[in-house]
Length: 398
Image (cartoon, rainbow, N blue to C red; front, side, top):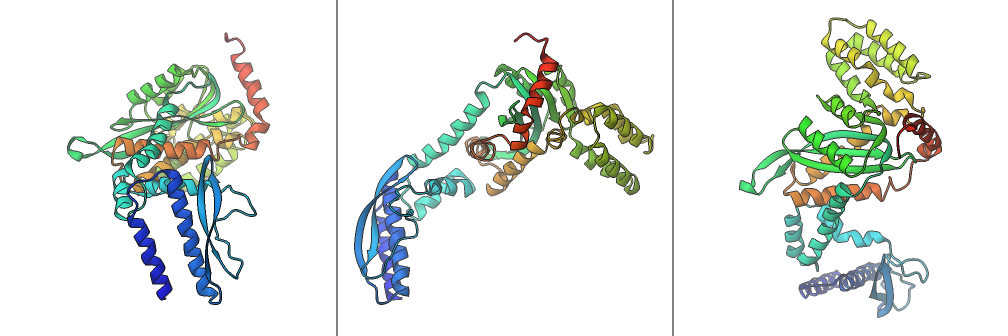
């Protein structure tokens, strides 16, 4: 017990010496002390063994190399847990995300900075600013870089958020307009995460679509979004040759809300069968038959009947793509991550920079993680997408 207290005291004394740092010095210090902590546990479990100083190793995380004093013992074959196997010098890049993870989990950038200072960890504000700026710049680049002129699909969805503004430190409502894409090769893309003050509006959707056009987007097979007022007419004006697909998940939610329990069950069961139709024409015929089974006086039924072609556009595409093209689930998946980031901040983003930092993290996580390569199902039917595209746009000038 005395030995443990002695180790803790020395560890805290060492922390007090840090006023500034460079990354290499920090990781040298960190892994030396991780090794000491592991050795303290080892010696407690092996009373006959003794500490025997250190030996030098050079380790590397990504492109960052640094020397480490590795704690050793005299009798037992002791090896700190973090050392890579054999004489390999490369450590997992997860260690490099230590400061970044701390930032992401904090309520705000300022609170992360204060916490790091209070516990005397060797991070200075300049380094934190570099980490934050990397992701803010990543989002800015994502929202402004050139886009492919041709895409298989785009997915649009608005996400209401709350954000503190500098003037008076009040919290105001904003909307993030999420635009995702699918290439003809089956690659998922984030086309933009644009945030405007106020509730979701047709005017702001027009600004978003104009930005996508200005960045080079021209021809699309299908545009998928919910039935937000005026959005269909906008997307049709910007992409007149594209199919417009209204989200079928929203359709079912609205059916549950507006229909009786018995009629909703009928609607749900029939619609599941329609989603498996052989083709668009058959699906349309079955959908019309379904609507005839519902009370014709209901406003919901009339509204759906007027939009039936836009609820079934996904049936024009290969069956592998129908689950993707029939709803805004792809965009809503990103919206859920935005909600998680918002909750981690305490229910609202503390500044525009804080919001953009977290958005940059989410975007990079997806684009350099799960979305880095096309889904194998989409890749296998890429030739079918190409054929559909050439058939629809064969008369266009390239």
